[in-house]
Image (cartoon, rainbow, N blue to C red; front, side, top):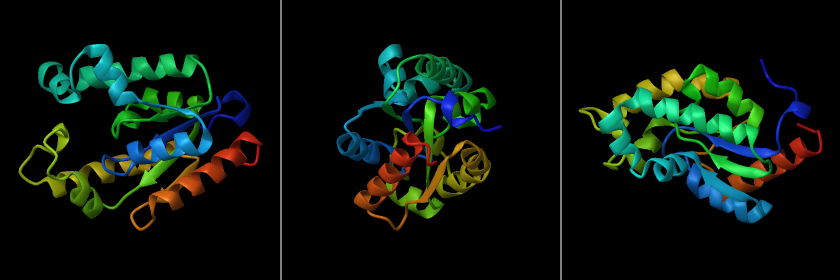
Length: 183
């Protein structure tokens, strides 16, 4: 169930698979919209004093996902009018989906598996891609996550063939419409 506009905060939430451009677009949108930017993975790393890879290795994915849910709850209950870049797996937990929707205007930066592989396939800091067949793993994870991303999103953008500036302007226009009640 989608949350009504009036119950939602005025945050801008960037969501999508690893390599879709959340961090890059977050910085661009922060400048364009004059809003602060927070990356949930970085917040968790700071709180835990170690990298996401280390958290996965020492405590496992389930512990990390619990940390994400606790953080989303704090962010939902906190202030408004910030840009939040979510980790790629954050929406997978059912309870996170409602939290994300309540946090503000949600943008899914959709990306093809081949583009992900091109951008992050060799990045050893991506624990979920440390396997025999990273492209196969990307396809599998995207197939699982795409319906979830779609359920959470107010705006879906296919970003593979768009420039950073084109995506920034498209999101900025949609977000401004959301603020004025047009979304």
